Length: 312
Image (cartoon, rainbow, N blue to C red):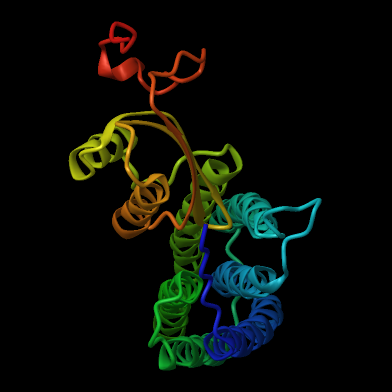
């Protein structure tokens, strides 16, 4: 099995550098927004700080994923440490849900007892936060020549965060213009919904990965049909397992084939098919000439309705 993992030094390092910078900017401004929110009494700023926390976390995971992808697997951890980022994302998602609940709870309290808010302080910090977001977005986007999934996800996060800062600016403008303070908790709830949305997405993806789910976009039934159609020697595909480790799909499968002239060439063609059409670079294939009668060979065969046991 020729595995070519082309990890050129420069793109990885460049990604790590950009992620590190963006993380620094976001983390610093998250702290600034927390302090500003406490000083000005603005909940919208605190909600935006919560949103910035989701960003900082996303950037940190992306950074860790880049780092862990470099750590070689060892005898105990044959996949390396790639799952650690998934676990971290899962914990982060739960923390974000808790933050959202706290902010919404506080917003309800503030509706009942409106609190004075220092409009100018709030305004200055919200604008600073907006600039910080634009800066990290620019840092991340400047070098996105190669589409690294982590960097793209982080850039999208930062873009979503711009909305949070805009919300805080709008609230500050309304408060300075009309003195109507309830706008602050109202917008803090809206920003919290943004946080909740990214938390939910994160939770869904990380849980799927931790439960050894297949990639969401992959239709195994279709993959089996396509494989049989594209490679005439393949008669049947069964005992298929696909799961994700650190966002990389891994697959094991049994293939019943017509005895080929060149076993290795056929194996190579099947691997190439999986890599080319389904982005599965790591596949382990068991080739069989007779039909297989293992108890779990037909794990995901149930939906096709007909049993394969009648041909010997």
